[in-house]
Image (cartoon, rainbow, N blue to C red):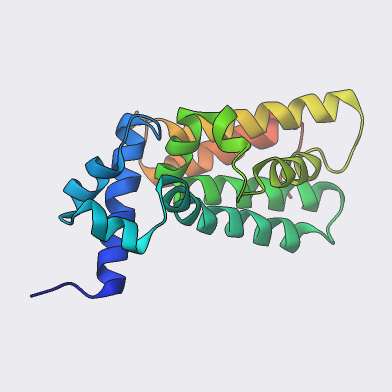
Length: 182
């Protein structure tokens, strides 16, 4: 029985995400994805114009979730801004762990991807984590949290159950930002 168009697209995306996470974006060919998805390369190209388009579709949900988080905290200030941003960022990175691993594989290339606003969103996240402060201590701490949460989410190391990992990431991020939760 033939798969529906949406089922085929979903299988291609699932295969691509898994292969990109293991072999990297550059280390995975369209043929690798097609073989893993159980379709021909021609069928894959019917659904996606190339690897870049697959990558865009894989990363768009995470990008949209980050944009939504930044919209949600836009009107907040002070401690509430920092706390809501940290919790939202940790939750987002844990929800999109495989996508984070993909980004981590080649952050320089991925951050310049033409169809994604990675740098613009990262700047907004940094600003919110710093509590909108332009002072060096707040900005440095925000950069440290931005990187540490990202890297911790990208790891395959099963350091703790997800709920413990989440709680410790939030606690550590808030401590790094010199913020006491309300």
